[in-house]
Amino acid sequence: MKRLLFDVNVVFDVLLDRQPFADDSSAAWAAVENADAEGLLSAHAITTLHYLNAKAVGPRQAMQTTDALLSVFQVAAIDDAVLRSAVALGWKDFEDAVTAAAARRAKCDAVVTRNPRDFKRTPVTVLTPAEALAWIETSR
Image (tube, rainbow, N blue to C red; front, side, top):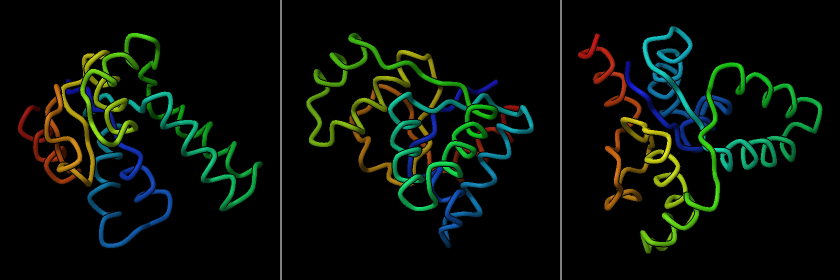
């Protein structure tokens, strides 16, 4: 079974029904819910999603959403080693570097993002939600 770390933008596509991206992102998320793949979010993605969601919908609703996310996705840890690996990548966008380093540390097969160009020199395969879904389908 494929282990996929989802980038924040893919999760927000689903939560905010951001068109035209929501359909592919929702289908990739559904593959996790249907146990066709293992889905992970980095620990920092959980806090970022909660913070931005709380600003949009309030703290109570944001906590319910965070709890729902944790019932679907596993959490890829962020520790000293992950942060040092992210620094060593030397990327301009540190958050993306942490995502890539967390995916590698969690032994993920791929990072699922809508912005693959942000992960050009990543140590892990990078897929769009549509590509991830096709990859899952062919590996069944």
